[in-house]
Structures are given as C-alpha cells and as structure tokens.
Length: 510
Image (cartoon, rainbow, N blue to C red; front, side):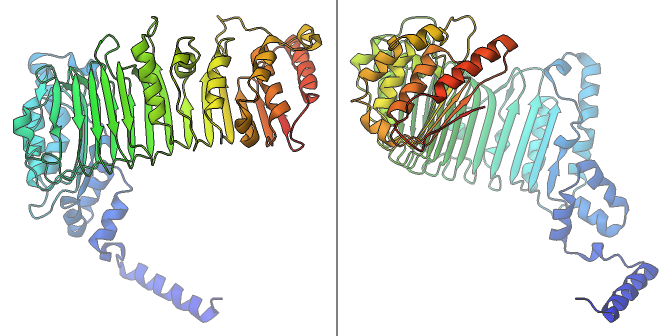
C-alpha cells in the first residue's frame, strides 16, 4: 500500500514536470513511438510532424504507411468514367498525398509497410512501386483501378527486401509477364496475393509456382484469374493456398509436404469434358472445397493429417455422368481421414442419386463431427443413411435443413401418429443393423430448421429409439403463426413421449 510520503513525492514530481514543461513522451525510443503511432490513422500521424523536430524526424522515417484509412481517390469502377485532361487531373490529385509522403521520407530509413488504394495510370503505379522498392519495402499491399489493362510491375520481381506482395485490380485487370521473366525472381517473397489477373495469353501456369521461382513462398492467394486453364503449384515451403473464382480452370495439381491449409472455391469449367484435379499433401490439416464444378477425374491422396474438411459443388441442371459420380466418390474417399466434415446440400443430393450406389464410399473411421446441409426431401434419406453407415465413430451430428417453400414436404400429423409405422420409419428400421456402430457412438444431435415434417420427425424418433450413447438432441425451429403454434406444441408433446435407448438422452426445443 502506498504511503502518504510516497504520494507527496509523486505529486511533487508531477507538479515539477508540469512547471518545467518536460516532454517525457518524446524521450521514448523510436520503436515505442512507432508502435503508438500505429494506433492512429495516417493523416493524424502526419500532423504530429509540426510538434517538434523530434516528431518531424519520426514522421519522415515512419516505416508503416497505410493510406487505406483515408481512401484518397474513392476507388471504384464507376470513377473510371472521366476522360481526357479532366480525368488525368482527377487521378493526379488523388495521388498527390501519397507521392509527397514517399518523396519526403528520410533517405536513410527503410519502408516496412506500404498500403494504398488508388485510381491511377500504369506509369503512376509503376513509379510508386519503384519508389517503395528503392526504400526496401517489406510489405506492399495495393488495390488499384486503371482505365485499361496494365502489366504486372516488374520491379517487384527482383526485389530482395519484399516479403509480402498483394495486388488487387478493379476491372479490367492486369497481365502477368512471361514465365521466363518471372522465373528466378521473388527470392525473398513469403506471401503473394493476386486478384483479377488476365491470363488469356498464357493459360497454363505449370512451371511458375515451383521452388526455383518461389523458394520461400508460404502463402499464395489467387483470385479471379481469367483465362487460366491449367495450374500447378508445388512450392516446397508453401503452407497456405487459396484459389477462388477461376471458372475457366480445366486442370489443377497441388503438391507440397508443408501445405496445411487449402481453399478452392468457385473454380473449374463446368462444361469441360476433360477436367481434372490432383492433390497430394501429407501435412494438410484443413481443406475447403466449395461451389466448384465437378471434375471428370479427382485424385486426393496422402491426406493422412487431415482434421477438418468442407465440401460443396456447383451442379448444373443435368444428369451426372458415371465418370463424375466416380470423381465425387474418389474425392470423398480422399477426405476419409477427416475428423470434422461439412457437406453442402449438393453433396447430399449426389449421395442420394440412385446411380451413385454403384460406387463404394470409403468409411470415415476418424470422423467425430459431421455437419450436413440438406433440403431433406424424401429421397435424401438414402444419402443420409449412406453417410451414417460410413461414419462408425461419429459423436456429433448437425443437420441444417434448407427450407425451400417451393417443395412440398409432408407434415407430421395425427394420422401418421396413429399409423403403426410410417414408410420413413420402416426405412430407418431396416438400416439398424448396418448402423449399429454409428448408433452406439452418437452423443449429440442438432437439427436446425426443424419444421416437424415427416422426414425429420421420423429420423429424430429413430435416433432416440436406437441411440444408446445419445445424451442431447436439440431441435431448432423458427417463428410460426398461432395456428401452427398449437400444432407444434402438440407434436412436441408427442415427441417427448418417444421411447429412448439412452436414459441420459434429453430433448431441447429452441
């Protein structure tokens, strides 16, 4: 506890400092003051230069310049309409602040981070990037809008200081230089993110993302690579790969001993007759494969470290060929080591396809948590039963019902209650022997979008009746009118009376 004497001394020193005008903040080391300034926006930081020579020096050597907090040009595809001299004046005015800050920086200070969003000409962009490279920039994050296509800034290729490079273009995009020009550069690059790339002139990138070009690359993000048809990624140090919105893609090969996270979304040409994918990643822990067109062939191998997987497809309104059904089966088999699995509604529809059952689904022996998105139509019970059969050690089951009001689903009603057993219940009862392991391990069931329809009530009743390890069943329902509310209460009372294999099983309605 502080004594009165100590308090008096503290007050005396405080008064003495106030009287003498001592500036203790300015005495802090540069590194500490840089950290404090990072909490402020760039314009506020710039204003500190008028406080004293000390603060002026700090501003001229400040290593982290983030101009995205002021968005000086209001970058937007709409702002690209102005033409001629008026347009050039508008572009130049927007870049004045950034250009002045870079030109007034201390020549002996290196630039750690430069981020900006701007609408400017290609020459203006090149000039800014070259200036940053001369100041040994380590992280360069640029979002740019130009009136026409522009070329990838070549000055970044040979930079020895650059660790992170992110280039996002608004329409119409930018072009990469030839692979022969890019190969041998990027010696220090750790993270590369490219968005809106036009690859019509070089649709195959099979020998770019390799060790000789990117020896230290750990993170790679490619988004909206138009014209890209074939891609191979095999960087030895790569740990995180994201590929999105590459709808022209025909073939993809990814391999790497250190790859831990893979996200591929909205990719592949749905009309290509020879599309393919090959993934070989023994250290992969997470994979998100969503809204991709189904390829003709799939090979997912050496995924023994896989922990979490999410899978969904873009399915056109046409019957799936035998080859594509086999491709889906191969993909699912490749994910069989996963402990947590999420399947979108298209997957459940495919597994419910009457032609799918000629293909054998590899068991998910390590699977502990399964999340399913489904419309829960009458024919979906086939796909659900297939998944339950292949998940013998499953502990948590979550079903999210997609309620499409255009599809009529039969309500659970008094007539069904009086029937000895419904057709859905007969089907589930016929699966009991093959689902024995599944029923002996299932602990938790959650059904979202529960509307007391026949299919979902029949499944809930079955799991309660045979789930020997079941502890918790949560049924989440939405709002309803007064008439439906009375019906809902009646059905809930009926469900509370269903027989239960586990004395610990509890039902909760949310």
